[in-house]
Length: 281
Length: 237
Ligand SMILES: Nc1ncnc2c1ncn2[C@@H]1O[C@H](COP(=O)(O)OP(=O)(O)OP(=O)(O)O)[C@@H](O)[C@H]1O
Ligand SMILES: [Mg+2]
Image (cartoon, rainbow over all chains, first blue to last red; front, side, top):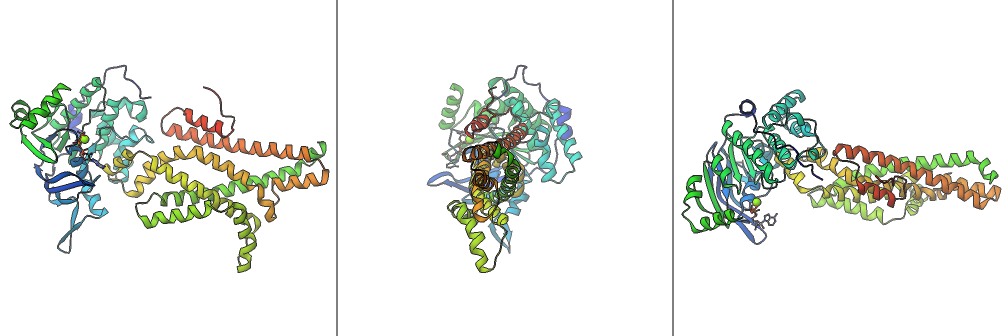
């Protein structure tokens, strides 16, 4: 049984802490070029084109099944694309150069590319066989080759930032959903990604825990220069953190623009219908 | 009855042989189960085929037949094993096949989201398995492993057919010399039972450790499975 919070979720993290631990510089842009993704006969993305500038914060909205999660999963290399190219910075994610030709990426290429990208999941996906500290240090030690001391120091800084310094020895199962998600955010940042993918990171949380996680992400957005791609149904949150909103339907971009315009005066009927449905729910 | 008790040294000797068979056999079974079980989770069809061949072959052959084969047939082509080695090999190969299925099933039962988190953290395939998937799968493996361990111990009662003086063999010996059929077999019934309880206890302790690693109170399911296996750990909490 998940523990229930008796105390209100911890307050917004310390901004100085955020500024101190968040990496800066070198955030790459992202570009989808005629990307096709199918599941069997279901064509989820049909020749999708869009790009995200270095350091830009983009929110994806759209009805269920429109392919938002698929876009993030393609970027995290959790799904393979069927056609087209995905660029992260100056390199293609799923292809590499070999003898002047473009060939499908091998494991080593994917490993190199994944160094730039981090993802936070809807269901947190912390490792239940490790305590909070190990969840945060395992990647930096094993994958990035940090010494244990360096990794622990980094973990402490990040836990401080997410307001959970006192939970360092706790077990994921002893944390509330909101706390688990904040640990998961810290775990992703511990790998020093330059692109952060967020897939409905508050939608599995009890309503009273949502604000704490959103405040944290607001601070991260403000204090870092990460390129961020975010799927959310929380319009207020999307307005706060994003430079641009993309409205998807059926694997295509229906409309895009700054959040104020998309949420305030959308020009497409499908966007209006979608926003109405979200507000009604 | 007192005749049987007078022969306790013989019984203890036999019990010790049975314990050795169980320990060596299960050590071999564990290694085989891990190797072929993990092979069975590979993405490559050819590698997975290795798992199928091993599992189907050794699950489908009686331990006793294997023992005869190692002990009586292989010498014909110049391969000579000690009886103990032949017995351990046969027990380990047979139980290892069941264990491989347990390992494969347990690893595949770890939620896919855990695998995805390891990809997002850029773990190598080996690190994914070693650091995340396998430790979590162990929690699922332990209860069935406990049952297999006891199966192996009980299955060893046929080794006297390849000249090993295990507990069962000693019982027949004592029965023949004292004529005490009833009490002899009561005695070894009790000894087999006690050995099984000790094995079950060891598995319970391992389960506790894994529960602690996963940060959860010892689970109800675990105690249910031990009841099913006939163990005493059925304490109600
Ligand atoms: N592993 C899969 N196998 C088969 N079909 C899939 C798979 N993953 C996604 N799909 C399909 O792809 C389409 C897009 O799914 P996706 O999860 O990207 O949508 P979404 O926009 O994130 O929706 P939601 O708002 O409900 O999360 C859906 O039709 C879905 O059924
Ligand atoms: Mg989705």
